[in-house]
Image (cartoon, rainbow, N blue to C red; front, side, top):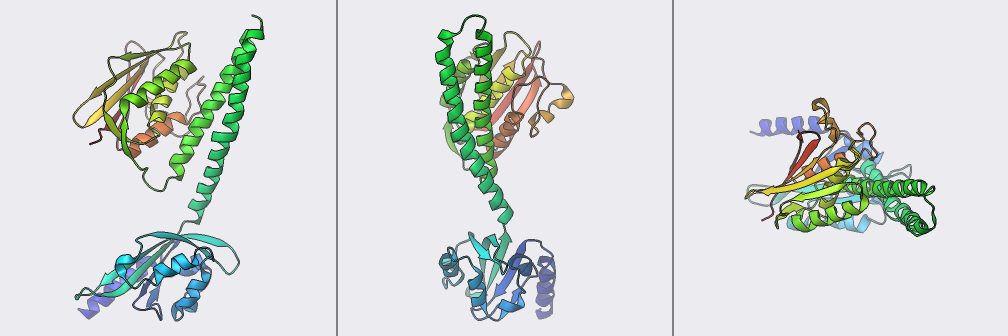
Length: 348
């Protein structure tokens, strides 16, 4: 039996030694490490041998702002009080900083006592860098640029009474461009939020009626040239989503207008429910989507010919609906156009 356990341990160590950006360690006490994987040196920039017999050396590598918090968890004597997962920074010998996601897993013997603690540290520095960059971009888009665009649109509205018939088309182009930039900041900001969220988005019950009614009202103001028709009542049900649900419907309605080649675009919204789901159908009278492009519509940056959209809206729709454990589909409308259907789980 002992030989079998030894073979398993050696096989496990051989496996984890080949993991990039991951360090695994075993310890049965505070005086030394029983095993440290090869990934340690890749992350910390120092050989594992330097800390095997002196765990305090490891504590010294922790960023000063994180040291007490991480040390408290590493030295926690009560296994039930050990955090399942926590982040912390380390400082390498060259002064560079790495972000780590850490886990400590207590292993108990037959008597229920902790015999070994397995530690797993994963380098998430690149992920943190992207999150910080996207967060900064989000703030710029959602605050600075959007505020300036709102000012431009406000002045354009006041200018309307002072422009003659010859200049009115040019003023309308300014308004249209301003609204498009405003729309771009919304989509880019919401996309950044979905990217920076760690793992699945948090969801909760959201009113389908309130969300969809609000989106339709705002779209009517944004696209006065289009007709938005609600077929029947929007059901008073709650679905599993979050505050970004409105973005799903807003982008579907935008898409129905922006890809429409008719002088008088018509968008019809229809809902249906079952005991477990709620489905929103958005139909338009545009040119439709060819069969070979139906899935490409949801690809990042995909834009239709002549589209005034950002190329991100439908990608965001699919990303969010997937996070809500829902489905989005495209079918042909009759006699022309497309029907986008979003099915979401009803909240308990």
